[in-house]
Amino acid sequence: MINFKTEIANAISKATNIEQKEIKSYIEVPKEAANGDYALPCFKLAKVLKKAPQAIATEIKEKIEIDTNIIQKIEIVGGYLNFYINQNTLAKEVLKQIAQEKDYGKSTIGNGKTVVIDYSSPNIAKPFHIGHLRSTVIGGALYKIYKYLGYNTIGINHLGDYGTQFGKMIEGYKLWGSEYNIDENPIDQLTQIYVRINNLCKEDEAVLERCRNNFKKLEEGDPYCTELWNKFKTLSLQEFQKIYDLLDIKFDSLNGEAFYSDKMPEVIEILEKQGKLVDSEGAKVVQMQDENMPPCIIIKSNGSTTYATRDLAAILYRTRTYNFDKALYLVSYEQTLHFKQVFETAKYLGIDEKYLKGLEHVAFGMLLLKTGKMSTREGNVIKLEELLNEAIQRAQKIIDEKNPNLENKEEIAKKVGIGAVIYNDLANSRIKDEIFDWDEILNFQGETGPYIQYTYVRTKSVIEKAGNIPNIDSIDVAILEDEESKQILKLIYNFEDILVQVTEKNEPSILSRYLIDLSKAFSTFYNNSKIIVEDQKIQDARVYLTYAVGKILKTGANLLGIKMPDKM
Ligand code: ARG
Image (cartoon, rainbow, N blue to C red):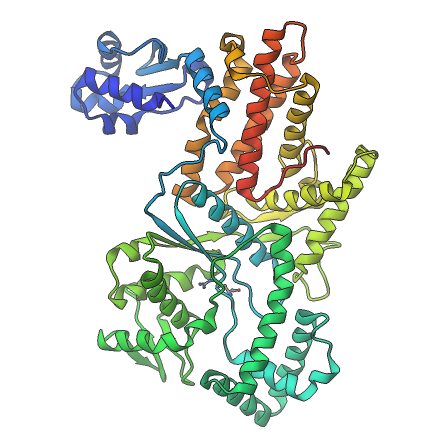
């Protein structure tokens, strides 16, 4: 596809003798469509060319040679050079790609690069909470998008399956296992056992000692303890799997914290050899460069390793196993300090600079619940599976009211309900706290998942009315010269660039925002131009544009994890 920005940069570079790359970095997309499609702020060149911006603009405009099939018009406004791309060429290019490519925007720019994405990562025998939902949804979207751009993408569920609490769980199960039905309702029952044994430990030092001992035995591979631990893990995973199925989430590795238990001694040894491990009140820690930052604890005063030690072992393992270019950690901003400590300590592991550069904590804000029905007795711990099922039920109710005769209502309600929850999680830049409000997320007219789905369904019904998708060769692109069509074509043209931006910033909200913009642009087009008309040529062009919009909406939404219904 023609890259308009590159073409402009090439031409300016020739006219000014300034490097193309530099020019390209200055070229902007004007906020107002009236100011053209691309603009060069000439003051950026003032220093090098030793002239006033206005004079530079005039000179470039005179000298520049660029095909009018690419750039239709160049204008000077203030110290800016505004470029207007050739409408017909844009339309031809975009529609041709839509016709040719099964997967529009798919690329190979990531080929040869590996991205490890550590996401979801709930804790065994504990409820899957809303923080894990955000990690799952944001991580899941990044996973799909990196893959689409050709990266070798590894999804890791770094399960919390290690620690003294498992010694307690084992003891609790030994004592009262028969009273609970853990096969039926594992997480709920295990949580109850855990609360009970924890209370007992507080009263009775001997019990606590037994729990510690159980954990020690577990680490040494004692068969009974290992069997129980495996049982807790399998049952918890079965329950988590229900959520992953609803959200269509997949992992390449389920290596949780316990996986690193035999890999921590090496970390300790390396740090010791480097002289980085210092004693601090009986613990062994690594001091941070910033004195105000607490040290990274490697071995606690009671001799046990920490969450950080396991993360360090995981870094070592991931460099060797995956040879990654990027290693992303999708974890809430509450763990910012943890990752700062771990990444700084990783510098002493003797791994290549490339790996250190690739480590990134992709932090996100909280999902705040509008108080009311959603919170349960335990405060903010709501069961995710219940939340997702409620979303489906609510969607079903709305659909029942709006479109009672629809077929496959259940299937559609599932797509709409889950889509609403996913979209809400991705709607704004990830670091922002997000408010969860049922009425808002399911509003078909708001900036929501269902709105995107609804727009898609509209494109489908237009095509249905038209009878078929017209042949690309019969399309007269001159018909698509109105502002609304142009707006849509430009958005579609930008799709691949949007995906690249998502990976540059690890920010799927760039794509969610884009899908809303495209939906809105289509709604304007739909309201202002009749699509199904007498004149077959006009109809064909407009139907084809509609088809293109539907294709992008579906591709984009799928990349976020949102599924599209054909009707709703
Ligand atoms: N299990 C942890 C928690 O629930 C999240 C783990 C994130 N991943 C990591 N490599 N530390 O808080």
